[in-house]
Image (cartoon, rainbow, N blue to C red; front, side, top):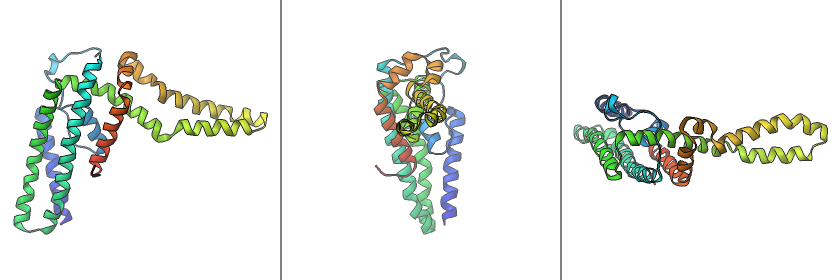
Length: 228
């Protein structure tokens, strides 16, 4: 009956896609794509009338956005747990179990409503959520990658190794050390994000880096099926 479980997953994904076609580009995807959807909303409101040009992320808007993220973590966590709990029902294979499992389709509708409620509670429009998410995603994903690759630790090891070498070997290793140092600086200073969104926006996001990073990691866990 694993095939039936897979079929339900496909049905749920298609249901989401049909709803997204009407509401905006939110679509399905893997865990990282889900994080991107948490960072953003259901699509820009107002179509061509939506604001264009640089967006300023204020401390107040970011505070509201962090709250929106936490609410959406609860929504997605509940959704994934409910889908996981349907597995045994589908494995049972009885008509009664299959009928009960169909209730999973209603989860998509409840998720969409909960997302709308979370935005309203935060006092943010869909466009604001999306535009704040652009900055947050660019900053937090890069910082997270830097920690995952552990470039700072590797640089310290490389510099310590270089210091113990004879002068001639130190010179040979120098290009590698400099390259690693530039990588570390990139993850620390985020030059690409600053060019695209401006120093002020990046600095505001970094002021809540701990909270935003936790939200990012928790969403990955939620979609990996890790119960918190």
